[in-house]
Image (spheres, rainbow over the protein chains, first blue to last red):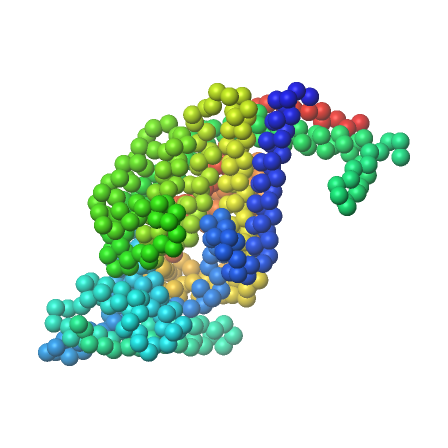
Amino acid sequence: MTSEFKFKRWVALTCFALLSLNVLVSFFLIRNPQLAKSNGIMHRYKLYMLPGPFFKEENIRSVSIFQVQFRDADKGWGNWIFPDKISFHEYQHNYGRYDKLKQSDFERHLARALAVRVVKDSVINYQNFEEFKEVNHYLRDQYAPANTDSVHLLFTVKWVKLAGKQTHIDTLFNISYKQD
Amino acid sequence: MPESKRISIRSLTFHTNKTDVKYINFYIDWITERLTSTFRGEAAVNVFCKAIQGFLLVKMLFSWSVSFMVLQYHPQRPNRYFIEDLFFWPSQLAYNHFIYFFWFCSAIILAAIIIKRNYLSAILVFWIALNLNRINFLANNGSDLVLIMLLFFTIPLSSFPRVANNKLFILQKALHNTALGACQVQIGLIYLLSGLDKITTRPWQTGEAFKLVSKLDFMVNARLADFFPDNYLEGFIVSWLIMLFEILFVFLVWWKETRWVMLAAGVIFHLFIWVMLSLPDFGLIMIISYIPFLAKEPRQDIVGDASVD
């Protein structure tokens, strides 16, 4: 056996071992998904090397609804608007506007980040939350009419239950505040 | 035991006879040949690398206004470590000079697509993708994670410039072929993960998942909502077909006879997701991820003695 052939074998077996290890770790994570939550390295490995699962039950069973109402200083409260749906409908009317689809995702995640923070830390002092400042800043620039003096934010999650086909709604935040 | 060899690895002890040793040697030779004899599937790999980089460029061009928006309204949190500052400085540049960042990234990705694929351009594009992912984090979805994974594999797949040193050249081929295999395996495992998750949950078992998905008004294409499976039988059949596809993909994609069926089913499945669920990026990246499966096998005899008698 020549030294080159030995080297070839050594390299091939090392690569094969790495590939097998990768498969084993992936199977292990498929069987024990909670491991990715408790370990930082596994979390990153799972996130980037084994993304998914997609269309999980909790994701298809719930629909989050973010709605906003602006109060005009003279005319009073306006109608509810649904920022992420406005962008999404623009995409639906023109499939070339991929940016609108991504904007819709961004708006939904911005509101969801605030909802997560409120659920975690309660709604008291919400005005100090970075997540709230971001939502407020965004809405003021993108949607608020010129003469707005107050804003009303409502974030609900609609859960569809399978057995009796009934739906129940959780309100994660319902806040009104004076616009700066 | 005159016909046997005794192998001890610490506490693990087992016996093999000459036939087993021949088998083991045969498989080691086979693996060695597969991984080190040549750069496998060069043409498919080239198309794949360019397609992945092209996907990143198109995605970036189409969503630059949202990237700008994210930077404006969702400032990045400070890094914890110096190494992160170093690694993510382009995203910091974006925060202060978005236009420079945008042109810098576009130029590098475009150059990587035009010139012959090589390690440097693959590393740069991967680095840019990580920085873009950091910027757009709140607007990202599963396609971005798959994209990063595939871009990571394009680095060893680049395999240019070819090295002159014989041993390094062997290593270069091995890394290329391992990355090609890893890329294929990982796509299969992503499906397996989703399939096994679905098969253990009631909505997918009963087929009611389609009714639930059709209610996701932030992603369902309103114009085509009527095409969703309507009754329980339709939902049940389609649901099980999807689960079977996702679970069996990783097992059946390796044989020529079943590969085309799996890939064709996958393309239809992802076109459905693209159109019906408004996920063009996810649909497209998964279709692109099939390119490595089109790699042609080089016509070479397997090294080693296959006979064991």
